[in-house]
Length: 217
Ligand SMILES: [Fe+2]
Image 1 (cartoon, rainbow, N blue to C red):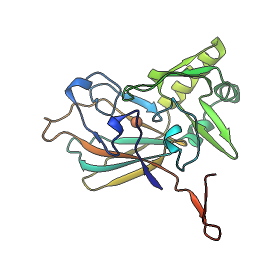
Image 2 (image 1 turned 60 degrees about the vertical axis):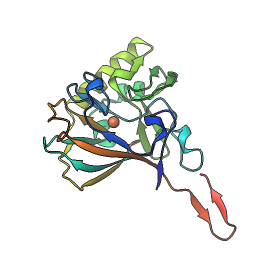
Image 3 (image 1 turned 120 degrees about the vertical axis):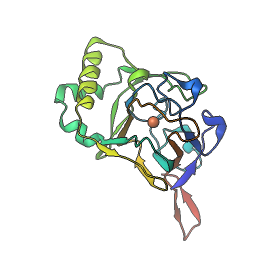
Image 4 (image 1 turned 90 degrees about the vertical axis):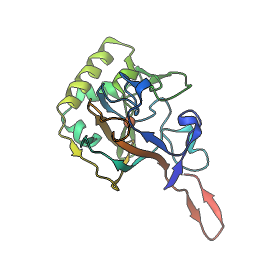
């Protein structure tokens, strides 16, 4: 994998400090704490795509977190899209695959235009990918809205992994096939509050050694 910085967020820096910031109070942001950040995928306002030199144009494939401290023992929760889909009825799933949704950039993104006429769940080969953030997703039709509500209810009852990261722990997961959540919490004082360091990553392009040609598949 290749670490990935994006110019539309975090001032283009590779590492984002995920820690409560006073100005982000009440927001669903990596700098928030007192508002639940419901199940979501990061930077959903872009298309799915492969890595390579143009990886910035796509939703970051991987999210990684290094733990500096987590004295409050706040879990980072993850759930596999495939597992959530097993609990969805087929009609709702078909609807979520329709391009009847609009997604907006999340709070942490500085400039971005809405991504219109997109699906919440896309099929790519034998895999399914999700783009979802409750606060950033709107439905364009009544059936799409009903399916979206079913999706939210299904997520609410999903069996998730609750990982309490300890100092020095490193967590990485697929942002296309795994959703994550952070519940609301009361942080310690700024000197001792939860502090993770986040870095996006894209797939490392495979190389054709014989020809020395980079494969951007
Ligand atoms: Fe996130």
